[in-house]
Amino acid sequence: MNDRQKRILIRAFAIGLQWIALTIALGAIVMRAEDSYSEIVSPTFGAAAVFFAAAIAGFLIGLTVESPRYLAPLVILMAIVSSAFIGVISYAPVADGILVRTASLDNWVSQRVILMALIIIMAMIPTSVAGNLIGGYLRVRQEIAPHPEDLEVENEVPWWEQRYGSGKDRGSDTSEAEQRTV
Amino acid sequence: MRPNRYIILVSIVLGIVGTWLSADAVGQYLNMARSFASVNAEYVEDSFVWLDAEHERARAEFTVTNASDNDAVLDYLGMNLYFDGRFAGARYVQWEPVEVPAGESVTVDVSFFTSITEIRPQGGEAEISVQGQLRLNFDNIERDMTVRTSGTIGQVPYEGQD
Picture 1: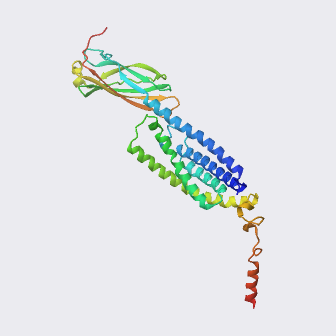
Picture 2: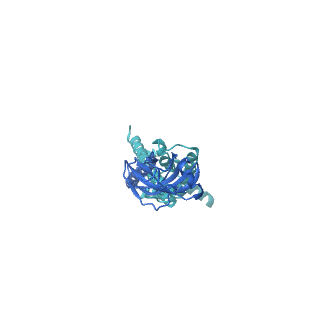
Picture 3: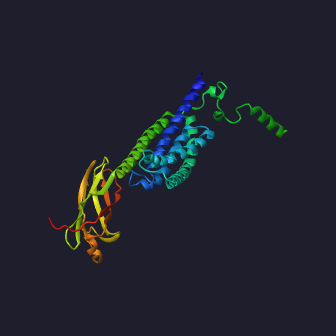
């Protein structure tokens, strides 16, 4: 395994770890947001806390994941998995053999999961985009931009650090301008 | 790019807190469900006695069993009396809360008053039954629990005062 593969592996591991951690944190808030459990589980936070927590989670994952191609499915998956935490708490007594699983329980759980997933996605979309944009700025500022090996061209300055007209196209631009003058 | 270590660290801390909150929430719910499923109230056999020949007042005993891990307080006990399935009276006296420690049973006295004077004379021959509900308040659980209870007592003639 070369250095580049190691870096990719470490990056994927870090993103995976962050995704799992944020999903669990968001799921915990979802569990404690249900009004139906307010007299059973304490403390409870309410739906506003879910919206707020989803916004923070979206921002944090957006800061880490560079590519929107990977960010979008990660955000949607986080919303679905964390909202499914309602099922974890609702079916816990069923798994323990205390309560009986009924169709109405299934319906209630699925309805709440869909509702929570929608709330979370709505909160996460703008903040994950914001995180992604700010993350790019931070990455450049902190000089943690892609390693030259990742760009497959050694010692080449990334395109976002080049001045306009300083690249290979400079000659063609000039000749075009001259032609227009003529 | 290399992920920012501080952002990852913050996320991991949030994840640890979330894991604890999730486990605690499930634990609280299971504790409540187990407690609610571990409570039972039963009529004590042959404990029903008429206190007067007119079948106006009676008393019976009920055993409340708390097999859960939490201490409970029996906040309220409401009990109705039926003669051959017809409402005849109830427990009308104000209830004093009774403590039911975890894993123990408590026997409570319930006094009845036959408020339907029309059927009061049938008290000695009628099939007597009771139906009621208990409200329990557990330690560590905010929500009260209501348990329904019923019992068939049978025919109980007046036997006179001891």
